[in-house]
Length: 313
Image (cartoon, rainbow, N blue to C red; front, side, top):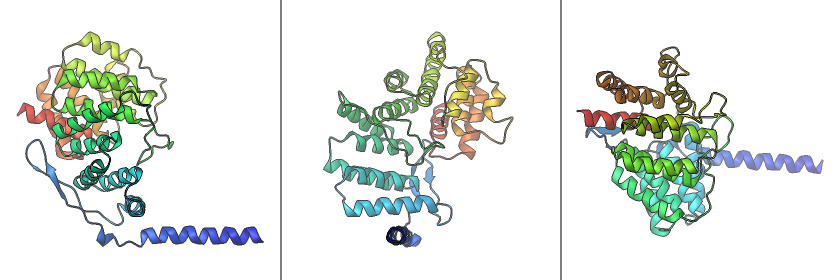
C-alpha cells in the first residue's frame, strides 16, 4: 500500500511538471520570420511558430529554456537552448545564444560547431568556416564524443560525434563556396571519424561528388568501393541509395522519386548534381530550379542547389 501511494505521488508530480512546461503560452513564443537572405539576395522567410504543428518542438524548447534559466552557465543548457530554438526556425536567435555562450566559454568547440551550422543555414559561409576552423583547433588531440540527436532517428541511436560533425559541416561550407580542394580535405578528415555505416555513406557521398566535380573519376570510383547493399543504414537512406546509383546498382528513377510518392532533398540534389558533372547542364539547372522552387530553404540539398544555381546565373 505504501509503495502504491509513493507511485501515485510520483505520477502526480510528473504530470504537474509536464503541465507546467506546457502552460507557457504559445503566444509568448514568436520568432523573427525574416531570417536572412539567399544567395540570390532574396529574403529567407520562416513561417511563424504554430501551436499545433510545432507542439512537440515547443514543449522541448520550453524544457530547454527552463533548464537554461535554472543554470545559464551550464554549457549543455546553452547548447540545447540554441538547438531547440533553431528547430523552431529561429536560426538568428540560435546564433545569438551560441555567441553569448562563446563569450563565456571561448575554448568550447561545441559552441563553435553549432553556431557554424546555423551560419550555413543563413548562407553566412565565411562565418561558418571561421567557426569550424576554430573548432578544429580546439578538438586537436582531444577525445571524441557522441552528439545526441535533437530529433532522434527511428531507433533512437545517435550516429554522429563532435569531431565528425565539425569536419562534415566544414567540408559542406567549403563545398557551398565551390572551394573543392578544401572541401575534399575536410571530408577526408570526416571519413576518419565516421565509425558507422550511416556516417560512412553520408561522407562518401560528398567525397564522390567532389571528386567528380574536380574531374577525378578514378578517385571517385575508389570512394564507392566499400559501399555494398548489405550495409546497416538507419537514417541516411538517400545518400546510401545515391551511392548505389553511382555504382550502377539502382536506376535513376529509384533514387529520384519518379517511381514513388516523393524523394528527399538530398536525393534530388544528388541526381541534379549527377547531371551537372556529366555535362548535362540544362537538365541539371532545371532540376536545381525545381528543388529551389519547392524545397525547404534550410535543407542542405536546397542550399547546395541554390549555390550552384547562383553561380550558373
